[in-house]
Image: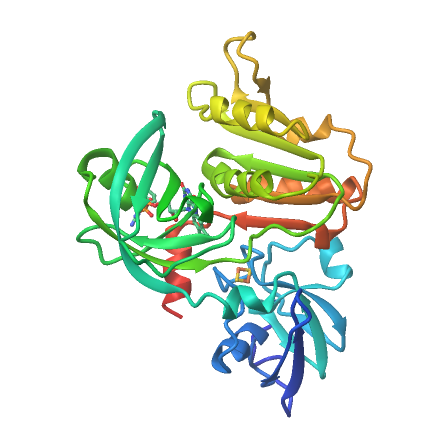
Length: 358
Ligand SMILES: Cc1cc2nc3c(=O)[nH]c(=O)nc-3n(C[C@H](O)[C@H](O)[C@H](O)COP(=O)(O)OP(=O)(O)OC[C@H]3O[C@@H](n4cnc5c(N)ncnc54)[C@H](O)[C@@H]3O)c2cc1C
Ligand code: FES
C-alpha cells in the first residue's frame, strides 16, 4: 500500500544539505511529513521541478549520505536507479540528517530569475504538417538569457493558461527565439498556431526554466529525440558547435511517427556538415519508401544496434515519456551510469496545471 506523508510521519525535523554541481551548498530543514522539494521551496530554494508527482524525473537527486526515502507512489525512476541512490525529491522524505547531490549548478536557479516579458510573433513556418516552427522576437532592451536545453512558459493572446516550450535556438540568436511545436487537434496553443496566429501578435513568456542543460565531458555524447523533443537537443548541438576547442564525439538518434511527419532532415544534415564529430541516425515508426534514408523503428530500436561501450558516455533524452523510459532502460543495460543520463519529458498540460496549482 502506498505510504502517505502522514503514515510515515516521525517526530523531529531533519537537515538536508543540497550539493549543487558547481560546489555550492544549501541547508534546509525538512519536517517529518514534508517532501524534500516542498521544504526547499518553502525555504526559498527554488529547486528545479515540474510535475511534483513523481512522473517526470526532473527533481532527481543523488543520495550521498543519510536516509532520504521515496514515498511508495509510482515513480518514473527505475528500481536499479533507486538502488544506486537516486531519489525524486518531490516524492521523498528525509528520515535522518542527509546530503544529496543535484545534477545542475546553483547558478542555474539563482543566476537568472525567471521573468515574465512580452514577445512578438516574428514568423510561423511548417516543417511538417504536424509541426510548427514559431519564432518570437523579444522587445528592445530585453533582460533575458537562457542555457541550451531550457524552456519557457508561454501564454498566447487571450488565454488564461500557460504552456511550456523548449527553445530550439540558442542564446546567441537572442532576441529571436525559435520553438518547435507539435500540433494536437483541439489543443489551445495548437489551434492558435493552426488558425489564429499572426505576425506581430503579443505572446507572454515566463522563464527561463528547467535543468536539462549540457554537462562537460570528453566521452561520447548521446542525444535521443522523439518528435518535437528535437527542440532542446538542437539548441544543445548548436551550443556545442559554437564552443571553442575540440568537440566530443556525438551521436544523435532522432525519430518521428511516420515518414510523412518527418522534419528537419536538412537542418540535421547541415549540422553533420558543420560538425564531423556528429553522427546522425534518423528513423520513423512507419517507413513506406525504402529509399527514404530513414531507418524503420523507434529511436530505441535504432539504439539497440549501436555499439556503445564507454560507460562515461553522457546521454540527453527528450520526447514522449514512454520513449524516455525505454531509452533510460536501454542505456542503463548498456552500462551508462544513471547520473550520466539526463532527460526532459514533455508532460501533458493537465499534469503541469495540477502541479502549478499545488
Ligand atoms: C518542460 C516542457 C517542455 C515542453 N516543450 C515542448 C516543445 O518544445 N514542443 C512541444 O511540441 N511541446 C512541448 N511541451 C508540451 C507543451 O507544453 C504542451 O503540453 C503541448 O504543446 C500541448 O499544448 P496545447 O495547448 O496545444 O494542447 P492542450 O490544450 O494542452 O491539449 C492537449 C490535448 O488534450 C486535448 N484536451 C485538452 N483538454 C481536454 C479535455 N478537457 N478533455 C479531453 N481532451 C482534452 C486536446 O484536444 C489536445 O489534443 C513541453 C512540455 C513541458 C512540460
Ligand atoms: S518527478 Fe519530481 S517533479 Fe516530476
